[in-house]
Image (cartoon, rainbow, N blue to C red):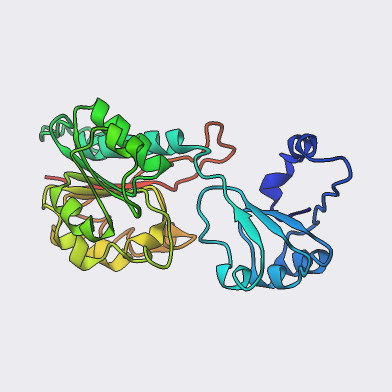
Amino acid sequence: MLVTSLRLVNRLPKLKEMVPEEVEFIVPETYTDEELATLAGDVETIICVRLAEEVVRAAPKLRFIQKSGAGVDTIPFDVINERDILISNTSGANPIPVAESAMALVLALAKKIVPRHLKMAKGEVDRSRSQQLAGKTMGVLGLGSIGTEVARRALAFGMKVAAVKRHPPTEADLALGLDFIGGPGDLGKVLEMSDFAVVVMPLTPETRGIIGEAELRRMKPSASLVNVARAAIVDEDAVWKALNEGWIAGAAIDVWWTPHWWDATWLGGGAGSDSFEVPLPRAGERRHHAPRCGIDGHVWTKIP
């Protein structure tokens, strides 16, 4: 069994308790794709966070891949589908922390927490009105395990909830008591209904860039977008344009399009200069006990 990520090594003691004693765990030294490929020759199982195509091709005996985390956009399905390889993820492992993060970002937008904090730090008082969530409509874009938890929390705030999902609603979905559950073709309708649209769908070839200029233009000028899924689901240029031209009121983004967002044009001379404020220490950590905390969550709201 090949462990391909340093993040997973700390879990080895627990993993060893769950498998027969004769199972051998192979732990790399550098975790580069080149090293992993050289170690993969006799491997039957791979445990990974991400997996390179060359590693799969170098593992002729590979029968099973265990992906840590719910997202599978870092897995080379084109190669895997050529062979009889099973793959599993850990979907449903941590929907509550992500749902709580999504609601924190919704509240940050509704209550203008960021611009008010920054004005207060300058000795200024912001007397503009904030929004009440009760009675507003939450659009849940992806009614999976995370989306379901987001919907439950929105309902607890007295919000109406409209959602889209890939597959027909189950009995459990219907039991939530949402105002609307539609399929992929209803994305535009849900965006039109939403005061806050929360992206929680997985990144797949079908969802990559699914929220672009046309979709954002369907939102209310008073509405806001929250993304706690994958950056590439939302078109970056379209969000930039929507914020700068006032198609939407704000955006809270817990994921980013590039590894180093601080080098992007968003900061200084763009959406972070006059019309919008840019904070914020990471608003959406994915774990209960996060070993890392960086500036990786961002909220934009218009300043009156």
